[in-house]
Length: 423
Image (cartoon, rainbow, N blue to C red; front, side):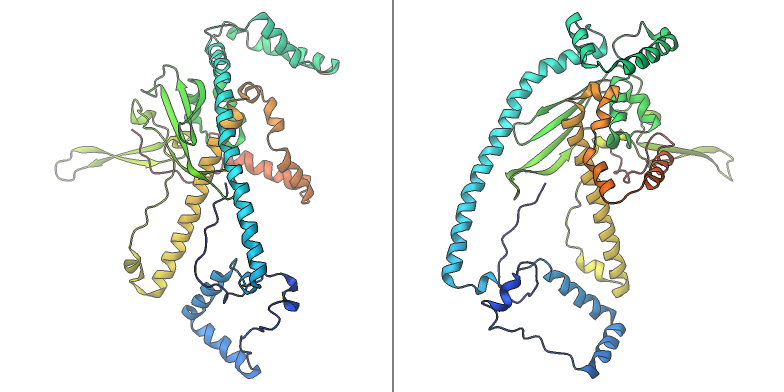
């Protein structure tokens, strides 16, 4: 979501950039104020280039200053006549009134969502009972579901042949209770989530009996994952909570603030899919006794979802970073920038996963289980690829890369895991 635009203080009229200066300004109010930038004589140009080339620190400082000018005001509004500026102030007041109404709309919309969610909850509860096998759907519900699946005659004949083969192959499972592996299958069909699921995760997610959500009293929501009895987890409920800022963003929407997970109690270290355990024996040269050395390292796992990334704390360590020369400071800055980009990507992925489970998986769970929802996943993105000139050959290459990336555990490329804080 968009961040609110902060009011800038101070005089920025000396920051000439074209971002918000109208093209007509050259024949308008600023025509009488030509720029005061001195010209570079022909003979001095090479000397200046040589000086900058021999002084990378100076060049870096100049580039930094120029970068700070991007997006700043050109001073056009500041130089308008008072009567025109007063009209602009009036427009800002009118816009503020509209934004107040927008804030009321968003808050009422949230309350409407909560009110209707209360009506959904009994249906979600019945869905859970059917999945775990506590109740069976009524004849009317079965007939209505069949009617929703009706297609043309050719497709029906093909489906009947497929169903007959499946019945022969899975006849041993006809006495199965409920719908085994319902939520695991649904999660694996949701592409963004499936990329985080490994083989070790799948063994645990087979025991999922429900995924639901609830709204918070403050702006935000909580995802609830309920597990049946299993050999991996001691706690049957895992939660992930997403919090929004109290104030709306510039776009009029709620702005995501942070997420909190829960502690997972694994029944043993070997059952924890978020870590790899390496053991090796070490012999004492004097006593000849042996001992086992154990090394634990974090690894990719869907269950890292419950240990969300957190923005780093800002500390006053600037003086320490400058020690060791300019080259070391430059390398440190580059490393910090890479870490910030990596953290931003992880935060964005974490938020995207939560939103997709809330808005897409939970309401349409049976469609994700059957795969019907996959065809309606990202139609806009596919159309955009075609418009941008992507060929079928390129698409095949992408598919190959995806298959290679998902070869082990269906995990593919993922962001680095957060520090393991699970037990």
